[in-house]
Length: 144
Image 1 (cartoon, rainbow, N blue to C red):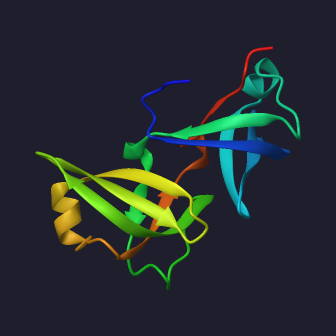
Image 2 (tube, rainbow, N blue to C red):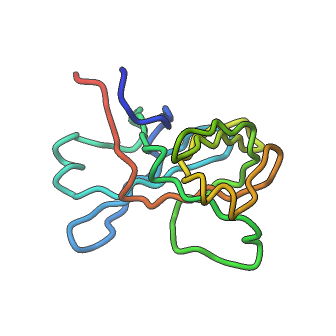
Image 3 (tube, rainbow, N blue to C red):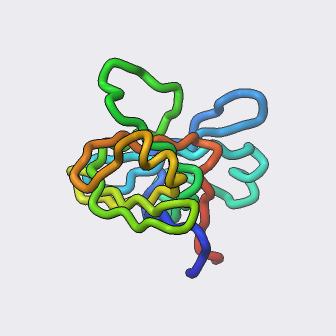
């Protein structure tokens, strides 16, 4: 499958929990002890016929990933938090691609404005927390 989402993770649904107000949280095991939580409507849970143990692909656009530095003293409301190290930065005209890797070897890409890269002093080797909201996770399944 080819999509424009830079971040794609194959995983297995380990839980489906009602989040109230017509939404579900789909908890996906992507290996190495890491999970992604997707927030989707209960209608989509039914339409995709999602079930525990099912294989899915979780996609997150690079522009939906927010980076935080020096965040050890803070807690964030977002369900998805990955502790990463910057492995590369590819600077464009207005934005930069920031390549990240977790200690477990999971790789992500975030798009950050060049002003943001400068203000946050982002450099290769710097530790950052990658954050993204559960509703920003798009799920895909193979057609049966």
